[in-house]
Length: 480
Image (cartoon, rainbow, N blue to C red):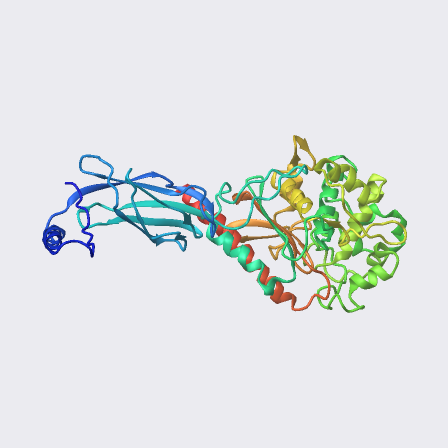
């Protein structure tokens, strides 16, 4: 059926002609209201199933062609484009077909799954609607590919839930997160998310007690290389220069007790704020010889029976590295870990005799923090080289205490049924490894004027949970 042309009246025409035209329009009107319409077909020529950034216009337009029952393209058909899923929009909701039966629109998509219903609005034709889909990524760009050992990828490639990750992205630029310096996600061995809301990539950030987890790795390497026999060696056997401080209770302290914070030494670190000069960390640093300060302490709990967080234990580990390998922990870290991982920019703080504060003084950039986490996720391997034994990685990252939350200078636990282990630093510095999800989350925060620390940690936990949920949902989808 050929589509009828519309009537056009002209003022200068004879009355007789006008009456004929009016009669013709009347007949046209009869056809308009006819009970049956001819069938047409809607075909998506191109633009379906695109992926782009949510909130941005897709590169390729949606191109639609309308044909009649004989597959002849039909012009002047009004095509309706209706958003039915997602929060995007088109540059025009109604577009007429040209003489080739073609109409097209540009589509700005929203986050996640988007869908448009395509139908026609015509007096002479009817057609079944069709549907066009697109998926919107969030605005987080693929991290820059640098010559630093990290391969980068998008969150889509990482199969993370886009909407959840975008929610995280929005959240961390909220004023409530003004303390947050960096947030990185490693998934399946690739850096897929990298944001610095209040900082920059090359910032060398004090990582506080994350230093403890790196010191633990140094002890594992010293064992691997034969400098230390095993974790059952007696503490004072490493410090013959302090034999005069030994007593019966101290002789029961083993290396594994120092590693797991169960040495039994008296310590008030968790009882007094770090801002208070009486806190044991402050007193130990002011003493000029932190190791001697700790070894002079009373043993108030049977070694191996009670967990008590004590940075002095980690200072002892630094001393053990020096007394067994002949070099300080900073040099041992450089030659055994940092060089292999390509970590070249870092800082330590030292006491007067050159002993680095292995409890809390290292500064690293966020990408290099992630490398250390990934070293452990790989079972101690890096670029085909075994840096630290897999046995040590496994032993360090499972609970070694009755309370069930601490290994060898690593915090351990589970979330949503997935085991994790975390290197934790004061103020909001963390390397979070979730092996079953092949995921690492790194975040750093300001250490200046830390106020409302519990509230800060809760805000950080909110985004960490969202990130893990983004991986879990996709992980479940794979299983199903």
